[in-house]
Image 1: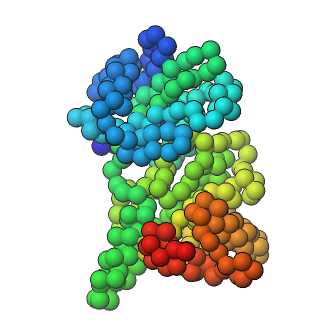
Image 2 (image 1 turned 180 degrees about the horizontal axis):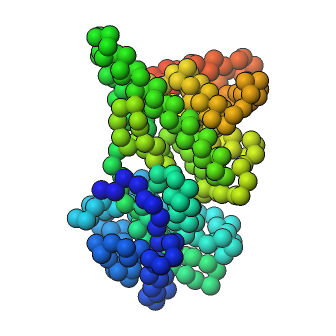
Image 3 (image 1 turned 90 degrees about the vertical axis):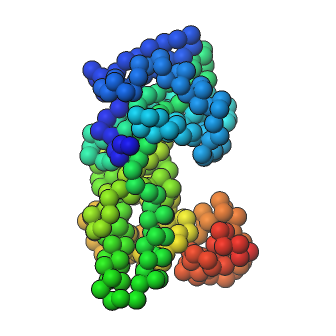
Length: 316
């Protein structure tokens, strides 16, 4: 399986754009195993008819195809509100936007899944349906890696082994903060930088951060302002993760602020906003009931297995 891509169907000279009936498909023909562009239409139609999505949201369903040449994830987008039609006419479908953003990120030196094909079913009012196919990744999600390290730390009694595992965990958190800062320094703001969209390739003290799901990722010539970039820090922070303490979250933020060359006073001034916004988002999206009129302990709010952890079954 491919770990990360360095380009995709939007690259000049390696694109085959084909049309069959109302479908238009763009496919990178650099590898013969990827098949011709029109073959993807039949393959994805069979996949969606015979398989169950591995993930489903209000705007898309993701399928896994265990292809002999290497696993493929196909994200199929659908309209979930009328405004999506207008946006498709102006900006193109989410599938095309995801492919363009992935290509730009790869050219900027970021690790992203390789885009194999993009397709749109066109109608007069824009794309009726669209999908993007990407190569499956080696590695594991950020949350899984952190949980594995937490479990190993809990079982290790030998001092040297404990220190080695703790060093790996700290290296991972530092790499994460540095990569998010590098993303913003390069002019990008990720659309959905939740832990599920961060994968880890490589082990030890040199982890490789791989960023997923770029249909809402935006890029500009100038570095994004703080009021635009800060949303990514909240997205990354909002989820309760096994083995991640408030100290670990501060390590990520400190690395981020240092990489962006903020003064210490500037970092201290901005941190309370992230804490307050994370608290508000947990209340709003996770339906967490917080005591009215009383300050909430952020450590308790974000503690895995604690009172406010939805996965623990003890939240109230």
